[in-house]
Length: 64
Image (cartoon, rainbow, N blue to C red; front, side):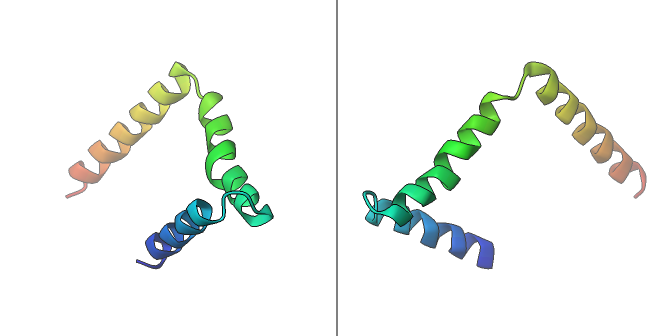
């Protein structure tokens, strides 16, 4: 619950303080850096992540 509240408070601060230094810093951390990281993903990375998640899911189901 706490991470959700913290995220919402940061998002509210980002919306309210757009043209301040803290607003620009929050924009960099919450918008620009994740966009740059997502831009580096390739189809191969996504396919491997899905395959690993499927294997983990199958292993956890078979352990029951």
